[in-house]
Image 1 (cartoon, rainbow, N blue to C red):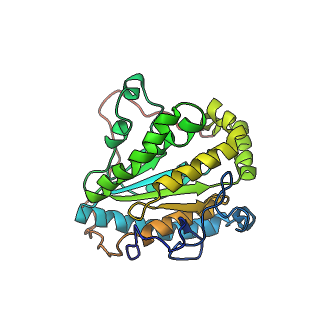
Image 2 (image 1 turned 90 degrees about the horizontal axis):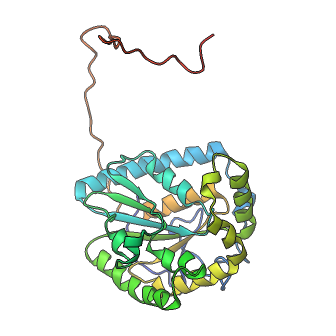
Length: 307
């Protein structure tokens, strides 16, 4: 973890841009409506993909730091909420899994809410999300969040213009209440160009293990790429504040994007080394025993069957 810099602006008047190889993660301004940030000038990271072995080597080092961060949370009782937003196929689930896979699931929680129920539609808009906010010592990862209102709900007509306007006016005050109460809140937008989005949609359509990720709304969204860009720009302009800023991360190369995001997150939390608990592991006082059952139950035959 690095020195905490959460809430600072980079002085460009734009958004915090996490960039590979730059520790402070700041560079550039947001792009024009209908285009991802710096889409005309930045490198296409998909042309500079990391090999799987290099990716796993870097990821393992970051996961060690994540575990240290988790011990820090336990010791101090701090609460961390990380919001992941971005277009369909950007890679939200992959980076969330990279963060959480080596952490204690009782401490690190992933929240991916389905569409609101009929009852939830009659609640205060933020109400169903509040129930999932972290308690002391917890890390919560939101795979999409209350920002659905400014994105898919606005573009696809599930929210009225008046509801979207009200949301954009209310959300900075709502988030300010959270950080005033001590919550450490991070918001990431994962950027992906349509060329790579289309390739990922096609992969999902062809792969039976990924087909569940596709929905009719996803397919309709392909014709609304620029509409989503305009909605995104409006959302970022209204909700990027010094206290709760947005950070843009290039996910055209998902492996590099995951590493960049995790590095940025760790660099914006206090760098406190928390000692790992030490346990004595003396040898057994007897030879290792086999597990035996005094019942009629038997274990299943192995699969595939032994020759």
